[in-house]
Image 1: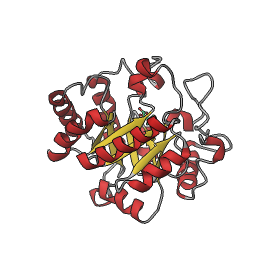
Image 2: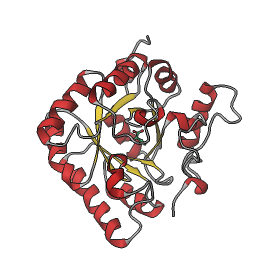
Image 3: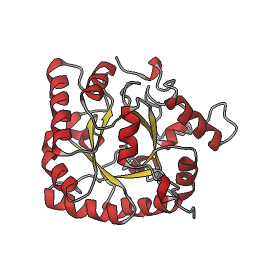
Image 4: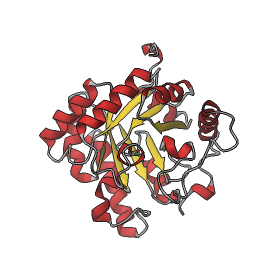
Length: 271
Ligand code: KIV
C-alpha cells in the first residue's frame, strides 16, 4: 500500500489552476491497486475508475451491466494504490436515474475513496449536479458520446457534427457549468467543437477522441498498453507501450506527450 501525501493530492482547484495556466493535464482509467500506484507515480493527475471496466475487465460488450457494488470494489482497490492523483468514480448505468438515487450512490462512492463522480448526460443532469455540488460532491459531466446510451444512440460514432446538435452540446455544457459541474468530459466530438466548449467554460474540460484543445486528456489504460478489448482500436487511441521498455516508461511517455501537446496528434483527432 502506498502512503498518500495529502498535501500533494491533486484537487479540483489544482486542475482549475492548470487550465488557467494553459497547462495540459493527463488522466487515465484504473481498476486495481498496482497499476493505480504506477499511474499516480507517473504524474497522471486524474485516475478514473470507469465503468469501462464492464468491457475491459468483465468482457461485456457494453458498460451497462456494471453495478454499484462492482464499481465500489474497483474503486476501493484503486484508492489503496493511489499516491496523490485525484480519483474520479463513474456512476454506473441507472445508478442516477433519479436525483435521490444519485445522491445516495454518489455518497457511497465518495465514502469509498472517490474525490469526484462522473455522470453521463446533458441538461437532464443539471438538477442532480446542483444537488450533489451543494452537498460537497464534485461532478464531472460526461457529454458527446455517452456509452451508457449506446442503445439510444445506435453506435459508437462522432457526436455534434451537425449545426443543431453542435449548438445543443454547447448550450448544455454552459448549463452544466452554471449548475455547478466541477469538470466536463467530452467524448468523440470534432476538434472545433471541443475547442469552442473548452474556451467558453471556466471549469476544466477533459477529452477522449475530442482532439488536442481540451484542458486534459483521458485514455483507457488497456488502450495505452496496446491491449484494446476491441478488434480494431478507435482512431483516438495510441499504444504507448509500443517501443517502450516497461509499463512505467509507457506511462511516462503518455504524461509527457499530453503535457507537450504531442498527444493527441491530427491522426487521433476528428475534424
Ligand atoms: O468509463 C470510462 O472509461 C470512461 C472513459 C472512456 C472516459 O468513461
